Image (cartoon, rainbow, N blue to C red; front, side, top):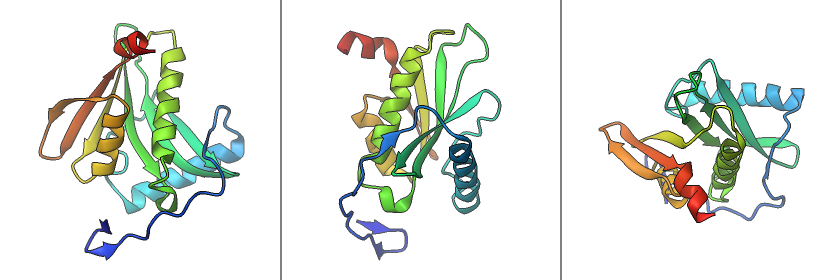
Length: 166
């Protein structure tokens, strides 16, 4: 596998610590997430494919004490809307190819299933066409292609279908 412009990608070495989903963010975690999201936005304009703004919440995974993966999710403001939108998934480069993103999104989905007011029934994510690994992650987690554009693809996961399987 290569990174942009034919630069060979270094094979992933096994992680010393297991990535852990952060249930309760500390003030330091929030600062780290904010710094990470600003850095990401400055270096990769497509990392967060949908600007979410108000009503959005960050989720994170840590290895040791370090935040290594984040995802921003927006929740419905109107009770008639039963859809949550994952605005982006970002994993620090040295932690990619270790299923860190997959663990993060699995836990985000688990958290969304627990939210009861309003009931979240569907989750969507737009994945830019340059993010094939994220597209594979979405498919592996049961997201189905909703529609394709020249810029990327919109995937949807029906949590009601997930409940039938669980």
